[in-house]
Image 1: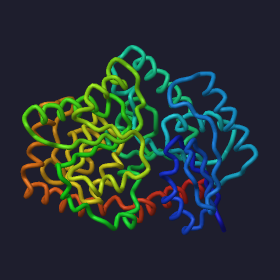
Image 2 (image 1 turned 135 degrees about the horizontal axis):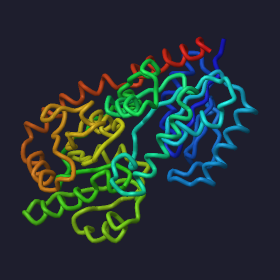
Image 3 (image 1 turned 60 degrees about the vertical axis):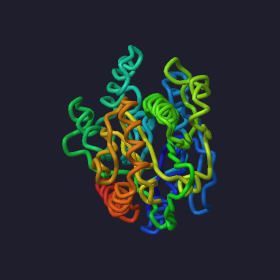
Image 4 (image 1 turned 45 degrees about the vertical axis):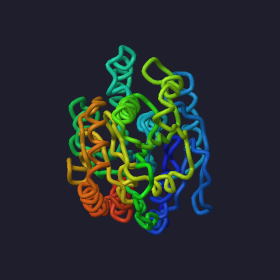
Length: 363
């Protein structure tokens, strides 16, 4: 019998389309709700709604009401969330419902990295919300051990109410081309949301350092600018326009990757970096940081060059090393291409289907 599942997310919920295809093949009827503007295939029912990424009590209250009305009018055998806010807003909206709810914690976000007073206050609110809905969630999927440990330490989940699935998976069948890595000048590319915690400032500084040292590198920065603060803003980006080309949000990311020589992600922390998997699958040597969400995939000088975060000098040296040492670059690519096979959707989807079936059967 067909099982009805609803996947709930935010602006990147379209990234669940490929997983949905595996769910459909396994007998699920899939509905997705989110804030993505992209097109969805006809065999997936998609609803758009309003969800603010940042704390907004009035907007969040309206979102909770929307969830209540939507799930009252639409019946499902299971609801699964994939974004930070839906992880607690959905179960909060459905406290009086018996629909099983599972969720994936795709990362703890800026509020757990920042030391600001606002972030500290938000952490308190975040923890209280998760404590409130703790018993309403059937299973919580984590993408790394550190996130799991934060939830266990703060008693936000039970010791048996979680699973580990490293990454959300990528569809390896879509990566049927390998970068030739012969672009001139040597081209580094970074694809990320442009926020301070992605190490954007360190990349800007490292690119300038390389130029000052006489290296003619091309550095591409791809992604939407999502911060306007003293730490990162459009004026800061513009100040580095001679050394870094800021392309903004693009829909031809795969083509840009194919025409690059190496990939950089100097992040301070990740849930599990999907873009590293994509870079690996397309055959680019990687420079990243030795942090949660990266080291679950890559080991230093095996699948990537890993440096400490917030270190522009180390990033400078890593860029020079990678551009100068083809033997090392080839080794990183070969190892990463093998490693990325573990994170293909064919494998990841089986793990999710097992979790979903158990939650439905237990209910």
